[in-house]
Every structure is written in C-alpha cells, then in structure tokens.
Image (cartoon, rainbow, N blue to C red; front, side, top):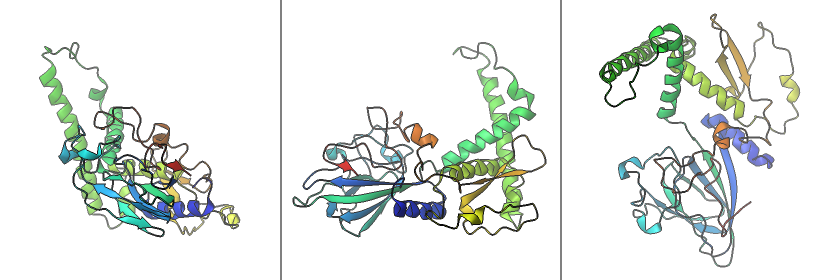
Length: 326
C-alpha cells in the first residue's frame, strides 16, 4: 500500500469503515511449493487470490502450544511455526482461485501450499484489528484513570511500605487492601460514567464529559488518525482543505474517521485539539507506528515460538525460501 495507489485507496476505504489500521502484503508461491508453516496471526485476515490457486487448511487449536486449548481462541500475539501433526482436524479446506476472497479471524491456524505444479500462486493478505480488544481498552482506561487519581489522591503518591518486597513482610495484607480500595474507586468512576452515558441522549456529549473510558477512547482514536492512510489519495481537490476555518465556520466532513478530537493537555476548560490524517504519507503508512517498530506481536510467555520476534500486522509471517513476498 505504500507504493500501489489502488491498494492505498483500498486501505484508506477499509480503515474508514473499520476504524482500525489496515495492512496489505503480496505473496508469490512457486509451483508445487509450500508456503509458510502452520501458524496463527494476531490480526483479522482477508486473503484475496490474484493468480493461480492455493489450497488453504484452517484449524482451531494446536496441542504443541504451551497456551491451554481454551485460551487459544482470539490470542493477543501471533504464534510461531506449529507442527502439522499437532493441529486439530481442519475446520475448512478451501481451494482459492483468482478472484476468490477468504476471511478468517484472529487466532485461526492456517497454512496454504500451492498444489499446482505448473503455475505460481499470487495472493494478497489484508490484515486489520490488531490490539483492538476489550483488554486494550481496559488497559488504556486504567492508564487514564490512574494518571488522574495520582494527581488527586496523595495516598497513591506515597511509597510502598519498607521491606514489602520480602516474602515475610507483615505489610502484605494491608497493601492488598489498599490496592483493592483504589481499584474500587476506579471501578466506581467507570460505573458513574456508564450511568451518565446511559442517561444522555447524545453519546458525543456524554463522551465530552471526560470520563476515564472517554479519555481512553479519545487516545486510541487519536493514535489511529495519526497513523492511518490519508483519504482521497490521488485527488486533485486538495484545495478544499486549504480554506481557513474559523470558530464560526460550519464544516462538512464526508469521512469522520479522518479526524479525531483530543482533549488539550493541561486544560481545565474542556478545550480539544483537532487531529487530522490529511497530511499523512502513503509511502510511510504504518512504517512509524509503535506496534510496527516493536515487531507487532513479538512472542512472549503466552506465545508458541521459541524464537524471539513475531509477525507483523501486515504480513502472514516471516518469509521462507519457498514463498517470496512481492
């Protein structure tokens, strides 16, 4: 998508619909060759077959992974290579020909040899919804809430009891009770935010109240807009964005996902900054996103790969000799 205008336009349209970053990779598998080893990804995947054909095999679980079977659905991180004999029976085995589109959710184990000995196989993988779970929103809500509580409650700024790191510390029980009290305060604040939103006719107005969940959503939305593909790629109508907008202006936005309102740091008057993706670069799309720089889903304690590093959001895995990335 960094180089191909039509793919970039597709990415921009999908990002507008999904509200999440989208990546595209092209794969070429030589005749009769095996592609990537069985694995699962930490993204939702769409496969578009462009040429030749490919036989896909989709599985739910692997007995070779240290992650319990019941925890293998919707994983947070990509797996490493999985032994074929460890896989559960295939739930689907579609053979894709040019023009076919296959979708499978995050965590579905897949592998796809090119069984045609006479023709190469070419397909696109379109991936999205990385780090978009309730866990991620909860983590950001905790971050926003605790940052606010830190400023308001001196108890959070006090040092932990001396010697509490020792297993024999008598302060352990009291420390647990203190943390539980702070967590209840945070939970109560979120409950009050939910009640206020339920009683409001306008969800936008409710979010503008500045609760912890609203702040977390604003942060995530701003991050998306800052890194998404700019809309209207290749358009000659750039002058429409060049007019001066005053507080009295009435602006029509055909694609609201191109903008985000972010609370002004340090402001107590409810003012917000307008963040736009209009100036984002097609060539640098997803190249500077923190998840990309960090490896996007490198293995951790919950992963199945002994090696470090994982798969990036926009590709199925690391390239092997039999499969070339175009």
